[in-house]
Length: 253
Image 1 (cartoon, one colour):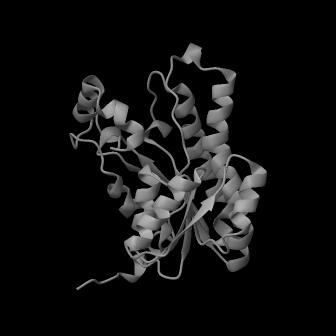
Image 2: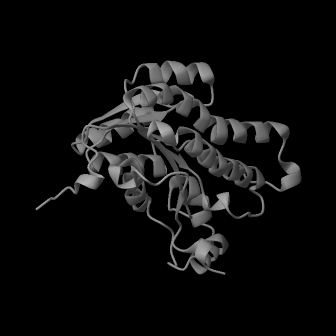
Image 3: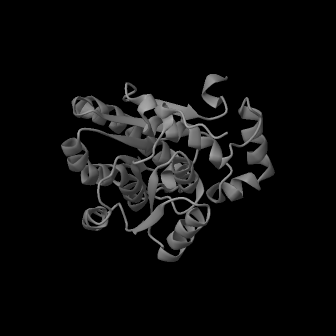
């Protein structure tokens, strides 16, 4: 018997997830849909996005697509204007550029800032007036274990994920009196297409499995529980937190 606990019931709620046509964003969209939410996926490539939406529909979920570059203010405003009321926003869009610190150009830093920071600021500003008017909502920023720790060759990434953690806390303190909870999820190393080259590198793969107490890469669907929790009434008194889903990396020396 399938029993839906009311604290985790997302029926009647509309969730928009940026950068969700594949990878962790798609996995979280599927998870929120499985809890009853109507989900809107976002991406810049219309064909990839349509395929992702069709996949969720095939599985019996209510899903739609929203094409748009959420690093650009005009595109973000236009895209969100067409999706209706938003109860849950998941700011998931992200990129990774690996190089020694001295080789990261000013353009790289700007691109990383626009994607990770403004890519959360602009969608949040787009949905907040409606959330405030309706008396509440949920915003989930996808941070990283590198919101807390650094690693060679990804200094711009760690910088922006650290900024995203503080954006989460700042927004939470300002918006709590509107019954809006702003929290983050900090994934560890997950088996996604974006990480395929790292997974296929025996040295890096050994680093991840040896460094992670769970001794493996995370499976994308394992982010669903955290996403459902932070999107649901179960987290109504949780605010300004980052929930790390990392197999125990941050807990271990």
